[in-house]
Image (cartoon, rainbow, N blue to C red; front, top):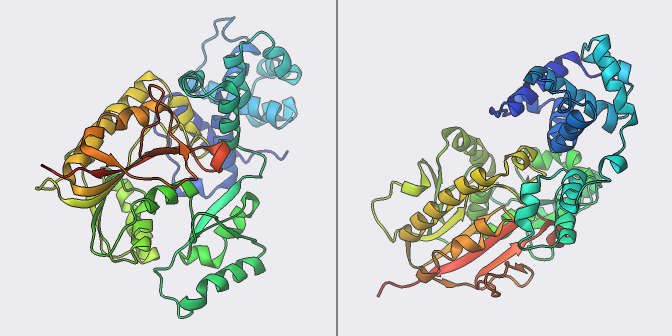
Length: 442
């Protein structure tokens, strides 16, 4: 392995310190453009509990009661990843990180680390947590609805490193194209000429998939740069497609940023639906403006507000509402590995309170006979089935596509109008999805 650029190493240490101290570590534009930095940061965070286990056990910090600063800890995390995951020479890594000779002697023990030996006295949950780099909290929550074999299959698929998972994308059709009548065939042929073989998804005519190895080719492709191709998980398209947006309908995307689902609403309605795209974050909402210009999304008004208290003067206002609610992200660990290590009772409770209030707001704002689509990118039943049980008296369930998996059973029964997408079954992120029609007011 080559020596890490010292500038990259300095930025990596700063990001890891922020993570260790639970500070925001959002990548700047410059950082995101540095592939080496992105690789090392996300790989270390993705495997954090495994690396931290080695740090505490193999280097005997817990046993010797050694207290080290966040700065030193960050350097040890890098060293462990380089030596054990990349099989790099200890002396080389020590010199990169400016370790003293005493520290280099200490980390030489890493060359003899064995996972087989380390896991020999662990129970099944502890083994799974360390093998797949997933918090035991998540495993214990999922054991209420899955066995260990199913948990393992879903986490492995979600965090796959085998390079076999499909890369989903959709073609947009809101951008003027003089060859619009033949643009789909033209675009597919063009991708083929660029070495990108794509197949149409069996459930959606606008969704295609290719090998994950082609991601870089697509990002560099002219069609992607022109906004004619959008990379997105199939589950995101499935959620939005359930709205079935029509011309002149007033539709609210309650938690809209970064705007991908809003753009699908516009595309499916051919820019004929009237959309209010709301988000509480001004920064996140600002990202949507250039995206919508690029994709030619029209008839969409952006609104910065708390979805719990949406500044709409009237109840029964919207024809349809999409509530893709904030959640723990337990179905999207591969996209944002930092979320893995926020999984605890407090974080779950925080999201449950928010989801419950957003659902109440959506119920009040929806017209009688209006459609609500509620989703979370979570595998926990608390953020899906248990939430919609609280509002069922106001709604009639709507039929979901047969290719969806049933939702978890609550008291031995599936909840009508609800379903799930699982990484191991559908090759998507993990999602809970519900579609309901509001009952008429008597």
